[in-house]
Image 1 (cartoon, one colour):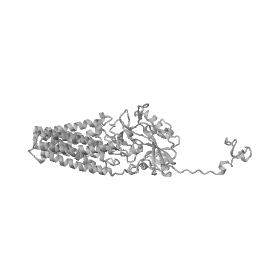
Image 2 (cartoon, rainbow over the protein chains, first blue to last red):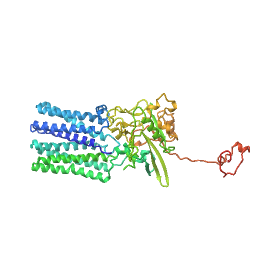
Image 3 (tube, one colour):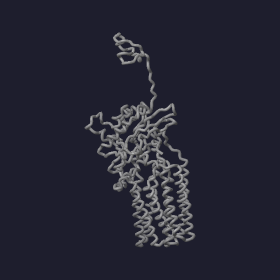
Image 4 (cartoon, chains in turn red, green):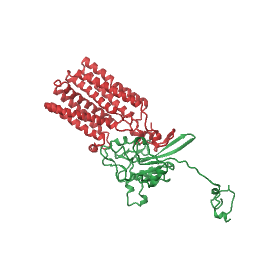
Amino acid sequence: MNPAFSVIFLTTLTGAGQGLFLALFAATLAAPGRVPAGFAVAASAVSVVLLVLGLIASFFHLGRPERAWRSAARWRTSWLSREVIALPAFTAAVFVYGAAKWQGFEPAAAWIGAAASVLCVALFVCTGMIYACIRFLQEWATPLTVVNYVLLGSASGTMLAAALAAYLVPDLAPGYADAATVITLAALATRALSLVRNARLRPKSTTQTAIGIKHPSIRQISPGFTGSSFNTREFFHHRTREFLRAIKWIFLVLAFPLPLVLLWTGSILAIPAAIAFAFAVQYVGLLAERWFFFAQANHPQNLYYALTG
Amino acid sequence: MTQLALVIDLNVCVGCQACVTSCKEWNTSGQAGGLADLNPYGADPTGTFFNRVQTFEVGEFPNTQTVHFPKSCLHCEDPPCVPVCPTGASYKRAEDGIVLVDYDKCIGCKYCSWACPYGVREVENERKVMTKCTLCVDRIYDESLPPSDRRPACVMACPTSARLFGDIHDPESEVSRAIRDHAGYALMPEWGTHPSNHYLPRRRTDAHHHDDQLVRADNPLHIEGRQPKPPFKDPALDDVTSW
């Protein structure tokens, strides 16, 4: 597939926003009384900003953005439609949660937070299932896709929570640093697992099944046109194998070990800027991860365009 | 239940591209909107087509066959592109099984094209909506056309009759007979999409010539002696000068 930056930004920004909210709400449950309302309001605000930026990015993916409202119609069958509902619903819930914290509506805020957490998980599942449900994109058609979206978003958001806490509530920072470390390592494990799985995949479709001719030696002479088409633009990344491999190692370094080193340097030496930098580095790593996620998926329609590089 | 479909005979397709141009001409002229070509005279021309003819070489030289392979939307019986559409713009008609896109509802998110393993959906360059083969739905029910013209433009154009059109759920239709008699098959059966369009494989063609066919022994003019009987190797003007 040809990675679309609109979708790369959509999924990474909302992932960070979701992870940040989950980190915030988990802290209010795990350490009641130790999370000041001001921190909750600030974290909710940052989360809403990330979610809205993600929503804005998604519009750049559409040919007809003015009709985007129609996309909530088919939630019964389409994971994309479900995501379109879950994203604004979750954003609104986080906004209301932040407002309730600001106004000090205490028992109500906890209930709103619980509802927002459910919506957050639902949004993670919707986002992951958009890709995992396409059965013939074999690189995506695995529960690992959903697991990776959950863990990578949570890692990014928890890293951001650690940075915010380092600036605003240093008391909370060590706890968030521990959580960010554990979640980042878990995400590394599942992402590595999906890399291993995808490296061992055997494509179900071949040129033989694509045109229905059972001969071991088939070679395409002409795709039917001399220029390019939607088929050659949307489904090919037009990069070399070496470029793909480089991006893979870049994200494996930038999204996992490097931010952890920065996080612990910042935590031990009490430098909040280092933790903020850890989040930024990990975010760039996750952009590369998402680019690779799309580029690695090999669409069976490419069998009909074997001459396209 | 009716399921309209095309049956494409790879045994007789000569790769002339007449179906491609005829399809483009009809579908770019319709009320639904044009299929724009961008940069048509430049280095990298591009355009939207519902139907393309590709060419494959099968076998190792010198034992090769050139296979021309027309491909358009297969109007799957279980189309994976339909349930993923978030707006309901992509749908399959209950009455005749044609898979269509409502261009007024499509938001151009391209998700249906990801969900089609055959790569037959293309975003129109100017309208920015997903477009695909309609089986010429604006032709086949048009009662102002003579009944013989109520067929898809590609079928009308094919000079070798490699394209058949009909209801594959009617066991006695021309297309069902063709699938049955000539081992019609579907593309990528491994995904369970049950494409309606079928392809007829290459067939071995053996020609049997008998001597009496070559010399036209039964020509009554020769029998009655009213035509000369020149040597067999002489240049032929059919019945006038040769056997």
